[in-house]
Length: 429
Ligand SMILES: O=P(O)(O)OC[C@H]1O[C@H](O)[C@H](O)[C@@H](O)[C@@H]1O
Image (cartoon, rainbow, N blue to C red; front, side):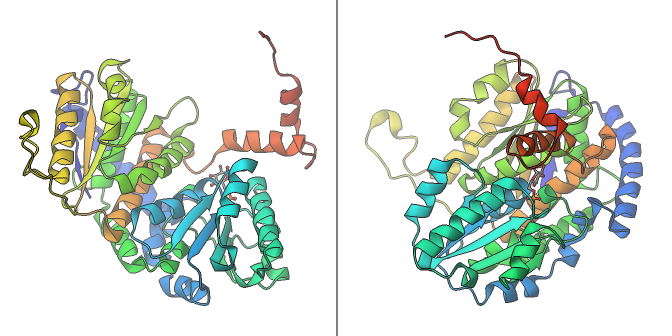
């Protein structure tokens, strides 16, 4: 993964980051890196995620999925327990279909279950805590649908969960194959583990290459942002946020990375959005969103930086020659060439308007490249959290809402549920 922060400099963006600021920031990066390394060595909560390229066990994951024979995988989870698998499945060329059930919209759950041949479907139910209402509810519905279709769900269900909790009990009761969520790894940092890798392993994806890509980023971590692409991204995004660029539009120029932008949104928002700081992640896709959101990023409030991601090499498709006069410039070119030209044009157009962007380049969008990107963004996020001085691995705001919902559903006495009754109304109808 290569990072180009040139368009974040104050010679381009207003306000931008000066070279002197970067030099000063580098001292703080060195301190932050020392804390990260200590956390990593001690496998402390959160920091342990950065050890996954070493600690993940691809053989155990392969052994858990080997007995499962399926054409379709239904991943049942939410947040960090779903987005990693969705990203892996949408980015890699797998030989199974993967669907993610990460919402409890009844119409969607019904429609999805009705559309599947359940006798050829496997379920991977994932919950770190083993208590998340949405995940357990969807799983109960999916397993009943299998029962109703005469399919033995116990033969086709794999569980990933923590050491204790409802899901662990259920796995034990039905003797289901179960993988452990690695200790100390929060959901949004768990893509390179038993949480998301089973989807790749089941679909013939190259799990070793994913981990090797992650390992190459891990090896590049050092005490200087000038030598560490992930830290260059994290530190520059932090410095831009401090200068008022409070939106980070993640814009990959590769259709298969669209879900990666969704994964990034959870990582960035839930990790950094606390104590009044953070950056609002926006999900964009190049070139599609050049024709919609880009107007805002270039000419709206001066609060959005754009992260432009692209592979250096991609399979291409020639554009046929045409005798239509105005279109002759396209003939003989290729769709990949067009996409690259659009990427560079967008980058230049933002710079011309004094808006910052960061360029992220991968060699290819493949398992190795995805491993680099996932690990690189996790390390960038952890570094940014250190610079913001916030508890990166907690999510008290999300948990507040979970308690309120649980209280409403009669799942216990939760003070937060009272806020629902106290809602302020000003009705207009
Ligand atoms: O894996 P689970 O325990 O089911 O948690 C699923 C999700 O739940 C919460 O909302 C957390 O804020 C997320 O970070 C987490 O990924």
